[in-house]
Image (tube, rainbow, N blue to C red):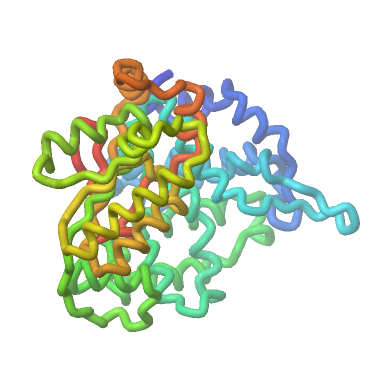
Length: 374
């Protein structure tokens, strides 16, 4: 089945499809800690969560898109437990550390292969990553900051509803996490005006400053005196970054890692130290002179982007990120048509680790699948 067919399928058909997949079979074989999941294996719990979604009082009032987000969040929320589960040899307790972080990547790759659209895929992948956060809200030093931050990554209302279903989808009430903790999440998000919308920062720069510098005052509005604008392009090889720039920002000078490699005679598989150093020097030249420019590289990993974004922010630049990801087959076809195509095996590895950018990283963000900008 593909994504379009799954969206039009009943929950029973979706469940039946999932049970034919290797990742689901692994979930059915994966034990859980009886202290939290006396119902048994991961897939048994997953099916119970799906049942609880349909029993939510709010379920009938949700849009079909919102229901789709919740259904596939449920299916994938513990998909990485088989990859992360370990049993303590002394106590016998079962743990699955960082299963939500790993699950984000697994869900993203499965949905990409299914042909899920970019915007929906990222909503589901981020819900998978943060699905367990509401229950631990009161353990945070700044609980309000937690709900504010998450409001720019997921829909807090859907996150709350999923957490309810996840809590109720267990064998007995004694095994469930207290729902009172989840109600605190809803209450705090409502008080911060970010339960059903992203927190309304006064300006884009106020948001950027809060997330980048950890500014403790949500009402703080920093002075805006940008030296220039830097557009950071991001996307897998073949995604069309050069074409997008030529069509939409042809007036901007470009610092391109591909071009620098060509100038220096460095192959993409060689050591990239000299390439990065040269790119950094060229970026600094533009930044020092206050010249707006585009920085063009794959930039698909959050940690890699952070090094460049920190540089741009140090020079007080306004930062825009444009992330391009057309359908995967289109991307591979465009890569093959390039003068210097990237081996498809390399693209597959990059795709598996890809972390599309979020609003936490920049002043403005464009996520484009080649059909719509968002």
